[in-house]
Length: 392
Image (cartoon, rainbow, N blue to C red; front, side):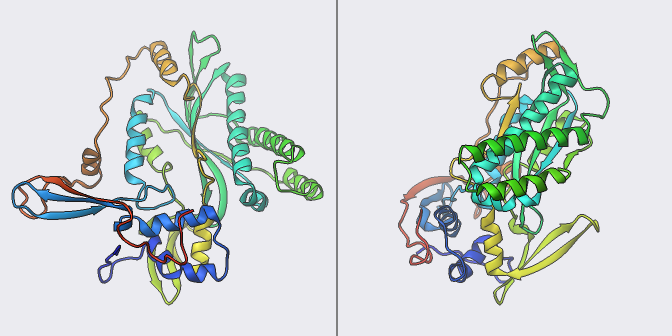
């Protein structure tokens, strides 16, 4: 039977909170299909229910059981390898120029609308932010920018806080492709000007979605909300540039493939209460917050994404369609050569890079190599809480 063994004194994880308190959560809130799938996957992650394999040492014969991970993008324990693989693919796309970090944040007045219309509203966020930056690139530099945008939907206390982190290459390629036009100095674009254009584009797209009845929204409610939103200053934060190209990947790693909370931030699960740490940015220090397990689960599930929704997107000369061709042309304009042919690291190489451990070396004799002995089929063990949780 699937079982996760926790050693005495080990810190709880999101899966432990779900395992102990998902029934309490269901007594207060409905478990929607998209949430049901997340909970099911996290409860079964690295258990016999998802199957796995048995390895045997070529020297001493020691056996080792390894269960499969759920690979759910909301799972805190399943993001390391996908992140490293994604970063490995981006390595050859970094240009020898400064990169600018820009954050587009939506007013919290929009949170109820977004939570009830996630796919439509989040697509509008990507569209408005990308169109704003591309228009500034054309007007200020006379060319096309290239940037990566990553969606985050949380703040440090797990509350709804919808914003995009964008990493913008410090220059534009001219419309005719004949020149590379670098951004001069440490200044990208004016934040206030970006904010005004972004607000206008977002409200235009949102208004169109309302007219086409793509939003669950009453007409009078939209008019009132629209007036409030135009009264607010929308926050755009243009941060200091990343000067060294070899630091760009490290910077990306902070924002891609993240989930609402890392297991390392969870400190205690006791008597139905969860304690986790958060950064108090106003005071410049890390503090602890304690809330009920039910409230923790509610906040965690707030950040579920629609099925198939893409939360990392590429724009301008980094858009997927012509990215390789564009980068080759830009390097030629910059007078630099193309990077050598890619070597895609294996899972074993990635794990060694992440942990420093050779996962194929026998942990018993430290001489032999662990080799596949037997496959464990999926579904051999009963899933946890079978009456409460079923896969969506």
